[in-house]
View 1 (cartoon, rainbow, N blue to C red):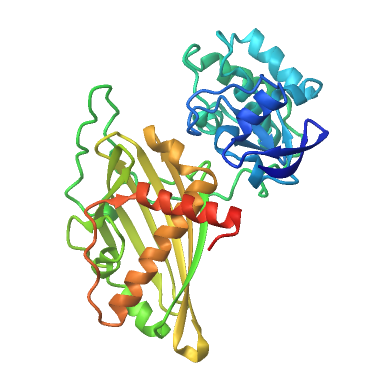
View 2 (view 1 turned 90 degrees about the horizontal axis):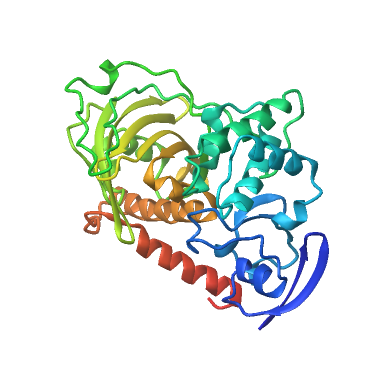
Length: 391
């Protein structure tokens, strides 16, 4: 047992809690706040959504022992909240609920959407609610209800709930590759154009709701050497676990494939990208788009990087900013702390391989697929070690 202090619906709580007890069980079993529902218990369905320090979070994968001092708000804590009251009315009018099991989580997420995004359109709301599943309604009434309340808030200032303003800055993808339509039985293999990506139609549509990741690592080589290496896509791709080129690159574009294993699921993302580089500032961009040929998930992304000479020019700091949208069955894997921690571990693996390649050492044999499950397990062990003070 570990002593923990929380604020639950405005009430200070001090309790001794088992480290393995997740937040959903705590509020339901200890606080008797049963409006928080449990569905998948894997952080996927969204039924257990609560507010942690004002931001929506999955309570089935959050642990009170790691939340000492946090403020928790369940659906009961929003009983007198005017925005939630208006959403309840709209859900009723638009028939946005049937069995009601998903509704508490839907309302909490919907409240966050209309606060952050006054006037949000239907497409934006669909994207924002992608992590909240409903088996009854078909979502049409839910979307209408949220859009109605969002429209009423046009002119209101956006409320910051996640440490960043929303909507996020627009990132433009210059690609518009054909994406295979999804199929209940099996997604067909996408028909990739014979022309290079530079000859395909250009889409000026920005990423609507990108997930943004920022990474940095240091390489023990001078900036000129690292820059020259980065201009050789075949060598860069070879340093990324699970990735490979599917056609020779001309240095301005590339076609690649990345195999990812997520527990029992496997994804084979295949796509194309445009490359741009400015040697004067040692900066570059990669704009890409791809599709999972196994499950029809789609990804669009923009990556920017910058090289800075450090340690008297004997080493180089690599700064990487990524903005991406992931849609389809794997969209649940793209959000939150898990995605950011996983990205950090992938970055470290890439940095180690890059350092080895620059030193002339042989790269370790890359796995055919990136096993995100093993990375997640090492991430969990690291989290537990930090939690209990073990290293």
